[in-house]
Length: 347
Image (cartoon, rainbow, N blue to C red):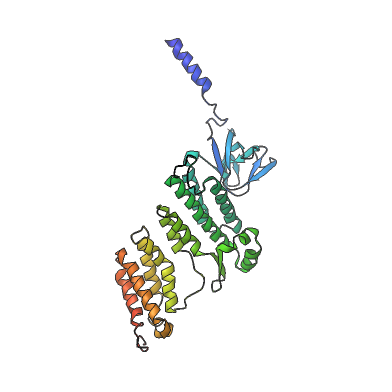
């Protein structure tokens, strides 16, 4: 029996994976989390540059260096890896993260959120994210059916719509990152931005470019009835619109209707419904009673403004928000201006 146990232990030792020189088995894959990560011929910063790896490159790990190294302010191992195009070399671990294919969606979601939240990100940083998403969309398209002819899973479809949302958000972040004094020139000359001109609108008062809000709303409608449609709709409600209202009542009501009102029409009890009502209340509160006068509501616009108010109240009522008392008080002041008497509402 003792001989059998020794033999079994020897077999297990023979078939077990060999540990990396550092003493542990490295993860099977790592992903670059920076732009232009250098793949080097040797595990050191003086190693010859094999190529630059874009953000989100999945690398097959072959070996891990024997000991950690410090590059700049970061300390990590060097990893010998194989790139998707077959080239091999070494990457510094701090510029990558472990990657597991069965947790791919979670990994990409976390990376997207991190990159979009970077306040100091440049135009090229956001361009890298945009291009990564477009590469992933080839792997995760919105499929009509699987190879077997069955409908695609809701998880697959939802992630495809998430990618489409991040693509729009990355494009908007690109536009916001352009230096103010170079915006017009770059938007007109940058090859990528030129190719996406149909998605972009210019706001003269703000002096900058936005992604058209309707691109988000159309995506939300396509995603329904998946839960991700609510996430997209909330992003759409927060997307800035070109122009400004200057206290002009029809314009004020239009902004509400096209943003938070549009969200509440779809999701009166949604996760962000209370936030939407709060934003409407705060937005109306920005206009004091001296701005909301007959001067800001021409007689010819009275009837349409009254219809807008009716529609907005119908949109708000199903939410049951505690803030409705405040919002309806503000709307009542506007409704007083919609009386046929042209002198109504003047101070």
